[in-house]
Amino acid sequence: MIDFEEELKKFQPSLEVEDAEEAINGYQNTMDMVEMMLKLGDRTKTKEEQE
Image (cartoon, rainbow, N blue to C red):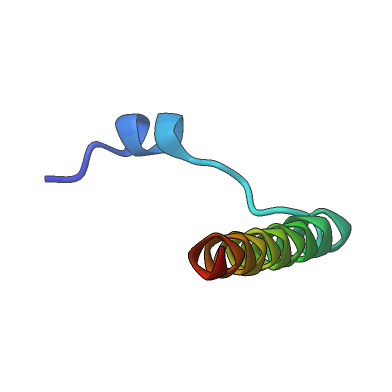
């Protein structure tokens, strides 16, 4: 059986539109930085192999 009091304690309201946009765009920017770091690491590895 569902314990409504316990479920209400776990409840977290959804983000407002502006906050959701910031959270989504911030995540995308983080992914872009990760991709950039991976590419930089690949370039460094390639240069080391050439030497």
